[in-house]
Image (cartoon, rainbow, N blue to C red; front, top):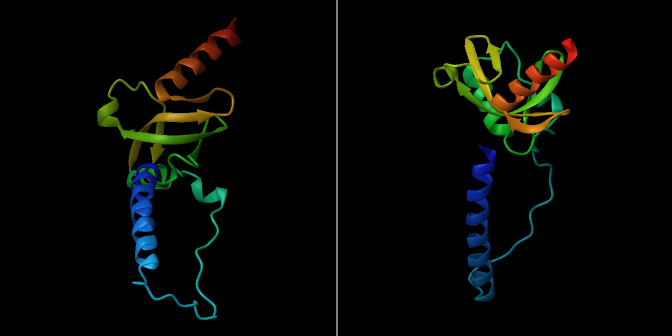
Length: 140
């Protein structure tokens, strides 16, 4: 995930920074100004970039979820509500269907960690339990 990459790069960046300071202080690095000019930039990230679509393949959806974890969360609509998906799993690992099922072009994935505006961050299994509790309360 982007979170695990972030941790590894933080460590490498700290080590590179220490080494760079040492080399600069010893006069081992020649510095120069970047030439003026127009340089390409990455496109700005938009919230629409995080939407999970049923037209995606399971692999595309899994990659988007991993890319958005832990900072953004990929979005999926369940029962008319947008929820953030932070982790998915293949259905082979979810035989009992304990988690919300997300349908994609070539299959299904189980949402194992999600965030809902009403309930907050939780496991998919707990989310299903909360939905069941609400249905029971509405029928009473």
